[in-house]
Image 1 (cartoon, helix red, strand yellow):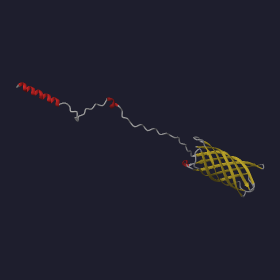
Image 2: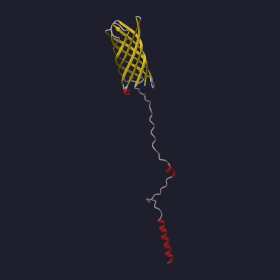
Image 3: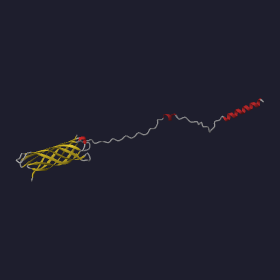
Image 4: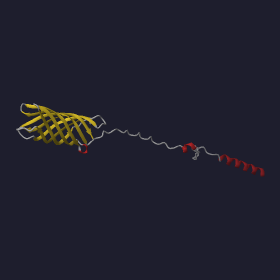
Length: 210
């Protein structure tokens, strides 16, 4: 009887050991730990945006100073005209580098007629407007008014008279430079010797922007 009880206990122990094996369908899943290098690897970031390009900007100038040669065909009286040569100077200011500016001009021309030296001078102020276009090639128009002086004294009137000038020109300035070239053409109106004069004037020279 004692041996029978011993065998029954042994069978019960073996049965419990077999039921204790892990069920393959169990909900507890074994997971492998992440490798150490994965934790130490830095996070990947989005690529940095490429730097924007920087483009050069042409500088604008408020002031323009001009000096050059001038030729004046002065129509003194009907049927009498003289060719005069001289110098032309001007200063222009553009407020806030705009298109409309303040213009001041002085010109002096000389000639010899019938053995007599003649002199003609202009001093005027007014407005100038530069037309849209490339900055290297600047076209403009202007209108000026002021006074004039003509010598020698004659018996036909005063040596001074009101004067006005209308015309325009072109400035050629190389890119990135301050010094350029100017060509201009104008019509000068005066009144001497009891008659009106409408005299063409051309000038060319150097313009400096500052």
